[in-house]
Length: 62
Image (cartoon, rainbow, N blue to C red):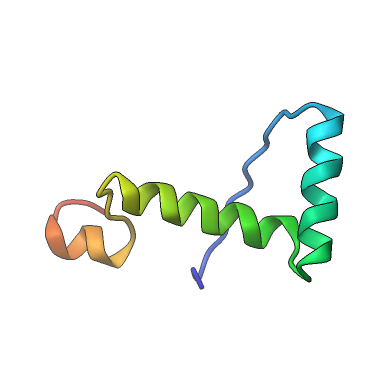
């Protein structure tokens, strides 16, 4: 898990939010865990490196 965290605010319609929360709860996950995994998967799908991997690939990136 990442050492630091940042807040991400997302606007979503209430019906989708409720369905998402219910599904996460049914899988014994919290919504933040699922959103973080979705973001990691999306970055990997598009070949985007971040964090330590990005710094090793390009030493000027912090």
